[in-house]
Length: 481
Ligand code: CMP
Image (cartoon, rainbow, N blue to C red; front, side):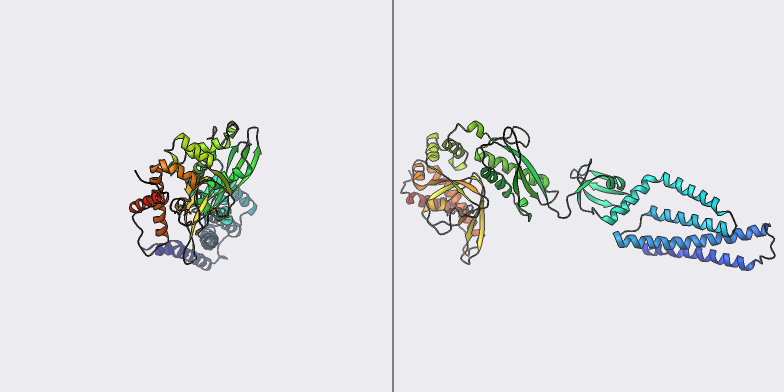
């Protein structure tokens, strides 16, 4: 038998049938009996009253129960799209049956009503006391269903519990599943009485903040560059339509507490995105010359110990960390750091423009920059990002061609500029550096061609790198032997 048919018979037809039989019995007995013939308090009188009382009682209670249950279900479906709680329906039935019993006792059996009322209130009080926690859960469930502070699918964190995703809400409890795949069942009365954070509303994204301690010698501009560029390197966080920012939290004995405030796209991505931002923060601090933390989440700039070091000495240690300069000798690194120029570029002001002549190479020290190619149709196509440690400008420097792209700072950025003349001194003795740069140049050119969907297929990076190598040698008038 289908579910619907079972429901129809069990919930409506059967009670209706019973109601009709009992109503009929009541009427039949009332009509059949000639009450004037019956002596008061005789056996027949008591039996007659009992039968008509019982049938009237059953008819009344079943009919009203049917109406009340349907009304409760209707109300609940309208509000929260589910049936009314069973306990609420059972309680309402109990009250109805008791009211019907009291009325019939008073009317049919002429019983003193005040005594009955006291007895039934005591019964209700006893039942209420026994079920008090369940009743509290259900009434909390009802109030939550009406207010809707959470829904299935939301990520919430109740004080004293791990955060979890709501997988089920019913009238008695709310079920959460944590990221560790543990199920937590929280009774609704507890949920209603404890504060909780709903990470999924009003928007699925939310903001977190990292406190970071930096030395007093780190300027506000430098701190902004280091911290904001770390966040802007993480695409998941930047995809949120809100901007990250930094604020000064506190001035402490050893430095300034900076608060980096960044956005998480949703709760499940919190750990990986937070970790990625933390990694980028460490990386940026490393390249900018600030040391690694000595306390969890407290990063102390080594600048205070490095104040005695000259600016050039810091640039020396910066160049030492850059992949392409790994093989250089200390003297060569010395030349590089002596001759380079430190430049600050403000957000939105291009470092190089596509099509312009140029003959210097830049290495990013702080910040983040975008590489943008303007296509022949006039479309600005972002082709790459440059973060601390990466270099650009090698294409024009090494081949003499105009700048192949514009490089635009996404946040205020510091770059070190190395001129063609300085580079010539290094390249002359370092064919492996020419080789390394040819490879990077070829990879970038192939990637750009693919992104621009040029008609001709891109050349093999290996082959292209060989050709570039040769043209660099001839451009600098070197011989490869
Ligand atoms: P150049 O052509 O001298 O000036 C623009 C620079 O952008 C270019 O050298 C490269 O260093 C850099 N560049 C071009 N394409 C990319 C890319 N896909 N990824 C990273 N950097 C690039």
